[in-house]
Image (cartoon, rainbow, N blue to C red; front, top):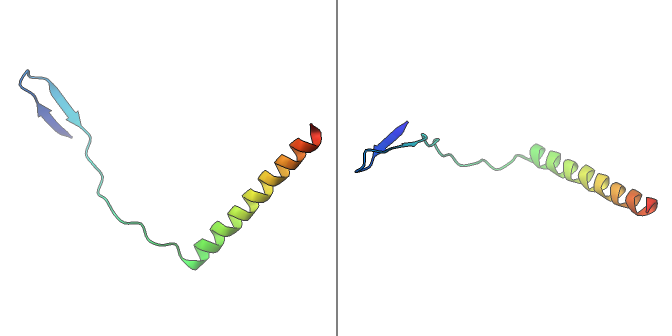
Length: 56
């Protein structure tokens, strides 16, 4: 832990910062998985909206 002391003797503790790294671009399989998840989510939300409109 990184600690500093100011002129009044007060301690300031800082958390250790994690090492940064770059994200990798998703593979074709991951992209297809994300697309299918988006399609299912869109279908679910559309169904919920239509049911809510039908009930009201």
